[in-house]
Amino acid sequence: MGYVTHVRRPRPIRQRWRATVVVLSVVLASLSGQPAWSEPSAASVVTVDPSDQLHIKADVRELPVPPTAPSTDAGSCTEAVNPHNTGCVSPAWGALGAVGTYYPSSDYALVGAVLAGAPASGPASSFNGPQMLLVRTDGETFPTGDGWKCLTCGVSYPASWSDNNNFTYAINSFHDGKRALAGSAIIDCGQYEFSDDECTPAQLHAYPLYWDDGTGKPGTLREPRLNPDDKHIGFSYIPPSKEVLAEYAFAGTLRFDQANGRYDIDDVRTMDNPDPKFQPYMVDGNQLKFNPAGMIGEFRGWTADGTSALGIESYESGSVDLWATDNATGKSRPLTRHAMYTDPNSGSPDGRYLLSEQVIGSGRLDFISGLRGIPPLTDQLPTTGHISGIRNNGQRRFFLPYLVDADTGRSMHIDTPAEPNWNAAADPAWLADSTAAVWAENLVTTPACGGGNPLPCPTSNEPGGRHSRVMITRFDGLRPTPPPTVASAPDVVWGLPYHPGDTLPAFPHLPGGTYTLDGEKGGQAKVVITEDSSKALISKIDVTYTDFHNDPDATINGTESVERGTDAQISAITWHENLKVSGKQQGTKVTSEPGGFTLSPAVLENNFQTTGTMTTTIDGTTYTQPANGA
Image (cartoon, rainbow, N blue to C red; front, top):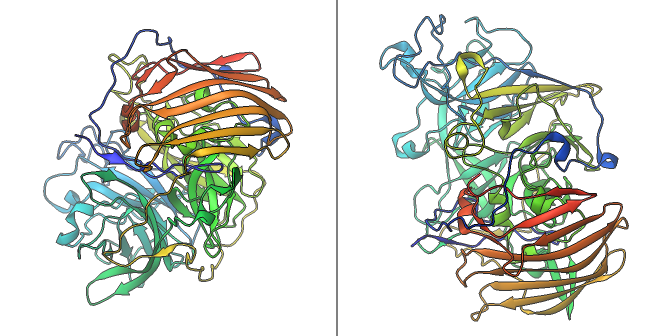
């Protein structure tokens, strides 16, 4: 049997997002009646509303990286390929990934890279596997003549941490320029900054992060993020279980344990508080009231001043956006608006902007997320695990880079000089002076294209035919600011203290009943919540809208419902939609009937499998779903 999961997803009206990785063997067979689907054109996709767009000139270029290994075979990175004998990058998808800010100077950025083709022995054998590079952003070179140098090549983890010896993700620099979070370790060059010629692998040490998850052994840290105060750290954790796969967000303080050669994470708190005041809706009699607090979902980092944690939660129906939640109060505010889906984000050090990787503009989620103004009431089942699973098709992601104003949410897509099959990779970063952003991109490869997939595989025009690259965008008019000195951030006191062995909090849900949600600008939504027989989860949500509008330019009428196929926490989910939106945007959202639109649990594996159809029409343009498997 497969695992089951608490998928407590995005919220605002919005439900928490919990599980992101699910191992399943359940795949529903493709049925007849599936719509034909082809790659959408730029003119037929939902984009940022013109009234919400930024207009800042962006100059996009590539950063230097090692030459491409002809293959991953040992010894393929010959002197003919790299005359400097300083390593080659793998040609594979994802070989260039997360990047990080290098705070002492904007002349550099940190880049995670998978190197390949090194000889099996000799001095150059260390240029192999997942490593962290320091890359020049100013066009200059290191003494080797390269625009990069490998910081971690030749640096080893202690044997007890051999399962976590990956320096490539996530990457965060300390402000002293001598240390950086690299995967589940902190690398340290002692008295030297990374950019100093004296900082070599011989001077570097890797100190693992240590957190006791109750077993007396190091707990697995998923996507740790260093707070800008260089003292706090956040991370996600998936408890080992054969029955439930759940994801929790944690925060704590770093303490160097010199005796054991590691960094301990102390004063740990979970950012999952079941108290009703930290839930997306509060129940007041038969009324539902939106309550923007505790909107962490999946932890994604920190604000530039370190005082708020970042997480992803629903902003509107089917749109998973970025939220900032105050460490002290737990109050939340949205940073992006209608991203459709986002999780890789990076704030500029001066706090003014975000580099946000979003699905809007790709056409991928338009059929289910395109219509604006609908509160995500059905997301409370929750459905967001299934919706977010649509955003990838195996080794093809649909993320596009956006510049977002952190105060207003206004944004703009950053056009890159590329084929549309290049897509952004997690995580982006900024230069220390807040004038430019850096991110990696990957080119789709088989089986996400070619063969039985309707998308043909493109040919890479990058050197050596590699399928990844690193981009830098300098923004016209963004004046350089010195990297800020960030004061010690408040602890996440709204979260629950956690001690090794403590029982993790249960994920609450709205109780069964009939409720009314008042629109902020008028109208009502009648909401009927049905629980399963054990009251452990919601089995069905029915919503009827009558002239409902939170936005004065969007009035909603009609009905929608969502229900589980079984009482198992991992289940197929079926929508029935018959909605009409009028106002600034004229649109409908409908499903094929009587069966509705069903998403298989396989979508949680980024394997799009459906029965029936869901169709959204906006101002005369119709948006349909991808074909099964596409």
